[in-house]
Length: 132
Image (cartoon, rainbow, N blue to C red; front, side):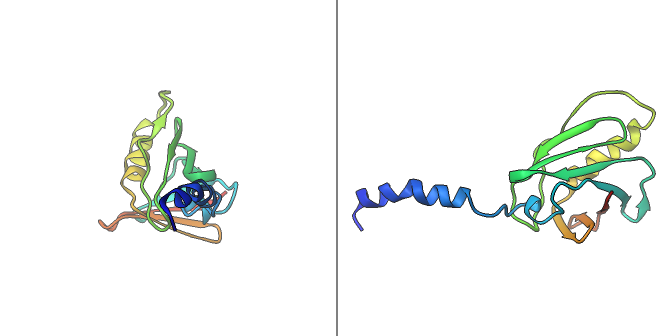
């Protein structure tokens, strides 16, 4: 194939790749579901904290005090959030929220099955979520 011919097909190849299935956790988690954090490292998380996955790696949720958003672009089962952007409201559960956000930022693997989501890392840390 001549170089000029190859360049003509490049936009088509890029378009087909962009239209393919979402290979991030968004493509494997329950669509349009809100997952509630159940525990961190085997310890119940009493405050309310959530996470949801939108199209193309979009991640949103709430900590005990604030809402947040981020992006996750690695293919499943890998997991890595871009820096978490959150609102900055103060509340009595701010310490729990800091634990939630810090632990979430440390997760590197995701496992989604039925209504359960498990985020983990190589340091044996784990977060267990369940669809509300």
